[in-house]
Length: 134
Image 1 (cartoon, rainbow, N blue to C red):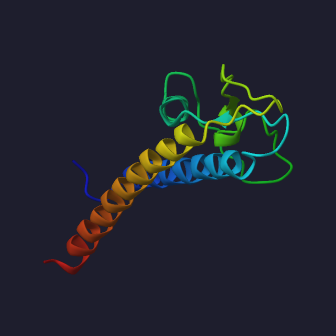
Image 2: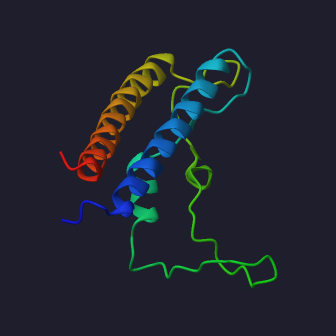
């Protein structure tokens, strides 16, 4: 195991970004609980992470000059994976936000975010120890 592997920290950083974006989607759903005809959205963390790190599908393409051919962007945006929940329970006003479901998703996402934060902090502490020689 390479202690100086930046890839591990980059993956953890991306996972934190995805959980943060998912929290934003959940907050939008909760904020629009009384908006007529609002359709709840969702973001599947596992789907985003699988697509982001499936090395069989992607060839890294680094652009160092604005005049280069852009091709396919190597960075995956969590926004591309946002979908409608298609809840079966739609109220009379056309809104399909289930507040209980959203609150449980927020709690679950918060636990995931805290876990990823702790792992990231551990990685930086390990790196700091290696640099200081302790």
